[in-house]
Length: 302
Image 1 (tube, rainbow, N blue to C red):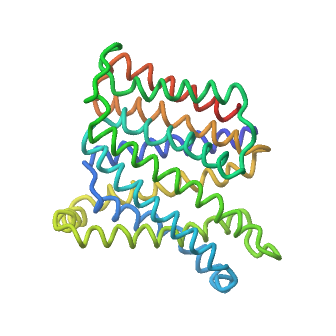
Image 2: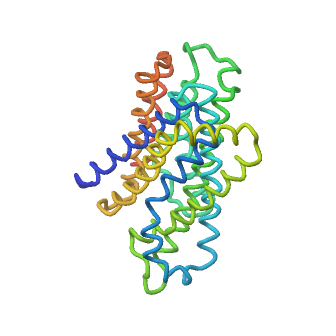
C-alpha cells in the first residue's frame, strides 16, 4: 500500500472518530443528524450538477440501490444517536464499526460472492467476538445479562446492521455505475454522483422522522438556533471521511488493505471517548477495544 493511501486513510480515520466525538458531545438526536447530513451533503452538489446531463442514462436499478443504501444509512444515524444518548462512545463506537465487517463477510459468502475463509480470517472473527463480548464488562468474570441487554449495546448493534446494509448496497450500486457501457462515469465522479442520490434519501427519511416526532421537531428548532455550526462541522466530517476512502482506493492494489487499515478509527474513536469525554476506562473495555481492532485487521488480511 502506497504512502499516499496510508496518509489518506489515517486522515479519514481521524475525521471519522472526530465527528463521532462531536456528535456524542452534542447529546445527538435524529434532528441533529438531519441538520448535519444536509450541511455535509451540500459540498457534493457541484459534482452532481456537473454530471446533470448524464443522469438520464443511469438505470433505475442503480437509483434503487442508492435508495436502499440511504435507508440503511438513516437507520445507522438514528441508532447511533440513540446509542450515544444511552451510553459510552467507547462501547457503542467499536460495536457499530466492527460487527458490520463480519456481517458483510457472511453476506458475501452466503450469496456466493466471497472466497473461502482463510485461517487468519477465522481467528480474527473469534478475536472480534471476544472483544465485543468484553467491551461492556466492568470486570472480567462479571457476565451479566444487563451488560448486553441495554439501550447502548442494542442500538449499537442496530447501527452496525445499518452500516452492513449500507456497505452491501453501496458496493453493488457504485460498481454498477462505474461499469456502465462506455464508462460515462469515472472512479471519482461516479461514486460522488451516487452519493448525492443516497444523501437525498437519507435526508428525506430523517425529515419524515423529525416531522412525525414532536420532540425531534423542537430539537431541530433548537439546533438551528444555537448548534448549527457544530452540526455543520460534523456533517462535513461525515462526508469527508467517506470521500477520502474513495480517493485512497485509487492508490492500493487490493481493496482489502483499505478495509483493514480504515479500522484504525476504532481504537482512535474509543480512546477519544475515554480521554476527551471522560468515560470509564475499565480493563475489559480497554482489552476489548484492542481485540476488536486486532481481530478486524486479521479479517482484512486473512
